[in-house]
Image 1 (cartoon, rainbow, N blue to C red):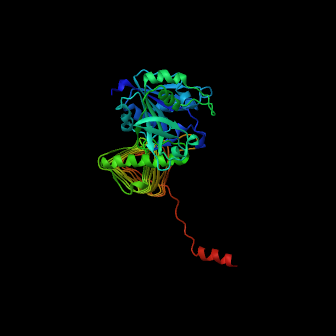
Image 2 (spheres, rainbow, N blue to C red):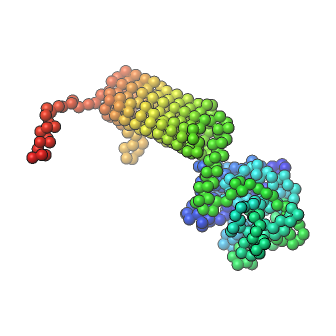
Image 3 (cartoon, rainbow, N blue to C red):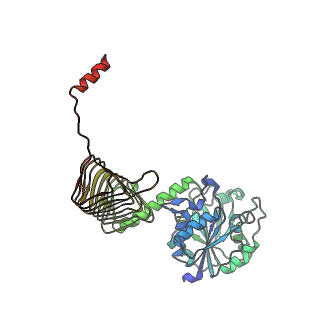
Length: 436
């Protein structure tokens, strides 16, 4: 089916009380992106006409989604006057001949799973799956491959309670069905809500066929609690890492590694156990060693870690970063920083060696300042570079030096130390007083 014949409506107006959080349910993140992001991303693979129905924290939801996507239609629904899934569909116009209705709390849904609805020509298609334990779900009664009715558990007979087929919550309707039945929905029920499932019962009463579509429970898993969120995170992580490994990334103990949705790899890359890669990080021909965290940075032809921390907006190329080194918003090219250093707001050129315990003092309590280090600079252990400072090419900084000057000229040695003073027998004299 052509993309211009499909409209998608995503119901994202709910508060999500069971999440027990001030954050709107659809904005809780999975693998670095809000749940709703994942649904819109899959939807855009099959349709150019996407409408998101919002209400609770509508400004925050629209702002975040607009930062990721263009050309998304947002409809603000009056959840007080039109509560429920059917209420969310009130007064929404669609332009295409087939309409998919999705829920905003199904982040694991895929374009391939949605395509199955589009390959079916029935006017109404209802997703179903079979559960080993359907307790708590409404049962879907099917006969002769047609949906007969949906029975809520509290209303089900003993025979109906044995049914394991339940409603997965995603529907495909023809535009004709939407235009006819949505205006007829009523909230004359105990909960005083408008239910989208009533469209099924009204259409059945009019003699229309409702086609069931058996779907994979994993793809249509809803997130209604923090436990559901954690379960979905594990599934999403498995998908992300499986795809990356199939594309050639080497992972050691992948179950211990966390990689967000925006991370990309190029060339031959190795990621060891216990690593965390987030944001729009790019890893190119590099080795990320155990326990390392890399956030929203670019790593090229380098080895990082173990137990290093690369913070956002860092660019690292042809560089060795060792254990317990932290880099923040810095550009390093052809550099060695073996261990126990903090490099923040710095630009460091090739051939430079950063000794253990070196710190760029980039913050004076009010502003951040930059450290610029040239080529072939040797910075001795336990030195502090007080920014703003420029260290030109071919400079040596002696161990234990505090560099407080604005510039160290090319070819220089910078050293600041006090002369060592030795007091003979001080140890024995000191402790002899204590014993007395």
